[in-house]
Image 1: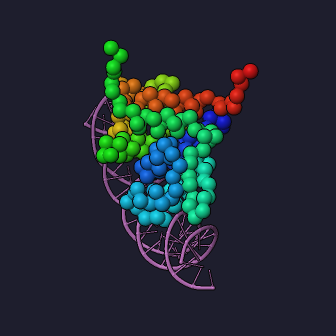
Image 2 (image 1 turned 45 degrees about the vertical axis):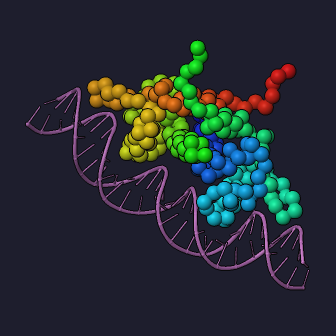
Length: 104
Length: 104
DNA sequence: TCGTTATATAATAATATGGTTATGTGAAAA
DNA sequence: TTTTCACATAACCATATTATTATATAACGA
């Protein structure tokens, strides 16, 4: 099925975007609140252009949105992204310690 | 937080595993039923060693289990994998056409 | 206007990924 | 026992990914 193949390809591309520790951490932070580029430059042990590149990838796929305020550019998660719900599931999964079973 | 960083790293590694179209399709098929290597060799337009390599990655991360029967090796999804539930969410997401809204 | 700050882009390099062909291995079949 | 079939592994190669440094740009402040 061509249709299914397309969905598989799209999903694998989406997951590739999330399959980097830096980008996942960026999204985790943006899930809490807006951040500017400089926040992330401080946060990570990589160069500013490296941070900029990660943000570009996330922006190009419309997973995050930007807003300019004075000399800063603020990023936030795009809640209208087709895979927004799945993104939340993944982000919340990371915050939830996997306690095997507490149903007692 | 060191603990959180570890969870982010683990999640990004898990997603990296799923971020390949061939592997995602393999998992999609295994979600339906067991398959041997030869099934996948027929299915995809890549060499047998390439298929074997994808299966090895999935096996090494314990995402799939194998069972030998005569000369064939059958693979199945490991329901005890820590991220099994998330895997199902992703697989089902691909099968569900995203109808924007039909709540009327 | 000029310097500074915040961010983006270009060029480049190291490493990772995913493919190929050639070959090895273990089980079944002749 | 020899051959064949199903699969794994090794060696190698092309491309993708992710980092770096150098440089450009846009907005602000003096």
